[in-house]
Length: 308
Ligand SMILES: NC(=O)c1ccc[n+]([C@@H]2O[C@H](COP(=O)([O-])OP(=O)(O)OC[C@H]3O[C@@H](n4cnc5c(N)ncnc54)[C@H](OP(=O)(O)O)[C@@H]3O)[C@@H](O)[C@H]2O)c1
Image (cartoon, rainbow, N blue to C red; front, side, top):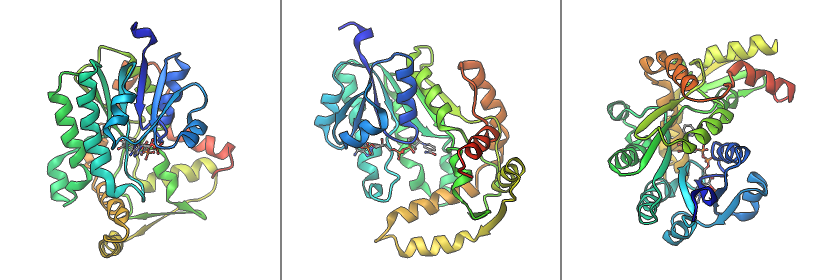
């Protein structure tokens, strides 16, 4: 079958980032297939134009069948949900390795994998949170050794992170969030990822996806306050409380423990990585054709939508 008639498959195409990838690919006239466990809710998310393959990626048959008539693969699966966290290994590791195995058999060469911004193993060990990044490190290493035409995208956290802690004029952040971190809009992740998968010249590249500026939470609170004209008071909850509570609740709510590890990472984000955000962003502007959504733009949009 001719390549133009073949589809781009998005594993995780209903997710926070994945649905934007699907939207941007469809806008570019690409044939898109997604895999989702729930056909009806997926249809509501991605609309009528994408094919939906209903199935669970922990089932090999789902992967084998879904890869038919596919020319390129985007993996944006995540098990960071209260009801999925216990299956993280099966979803984020085993299924991804099966996708790679079956893609090879099906002669699909282009592979795009969404990962974390930059995962530093020594830092994870130092913070005693290796489980936070070990699956992604393993997958990245397997992809790097594979024969695929691959691109790994190191996604920054979504800009949503700065709004998620705001309630009644207060931004209450566990640990304070005093280290600057990169962030990006889901729109930009979707647009860049769509352009990446359609290109063949980004083989063996790991590209960091970020907006133009890194912000610490107090800076973001000030920026939101300045633009909206409503003061946002930044407050800190000690991370130790979350450490103790999440530890006690491991057998009942393991998700909390994962959140604690994410917060620990956030509060220890390396300064040199944050310092290089403007450079990393410049690279994106030179590689891709898009107008980035800045935090200021996102704040104004939320004001117009009465969301802030
Ligand atoms: N969101 C962020 O701020 C952020 C930051 C940095 C990196 N990332 C990376 O970006 C990627 C996507 O993250 P996200 O936050 O967009 O994910 P998300 O919103 O949690 O979406 C997860 C996706 O995985 C799919 N999925 C989960 N289990 C599945 C299963 N057993 N079978 C089939 N599909 C399954 C879900 O599909 P159904 O529910 O439809 O089945 C959904 O589309 C991940 O690699 C993540 O690490 C995200």
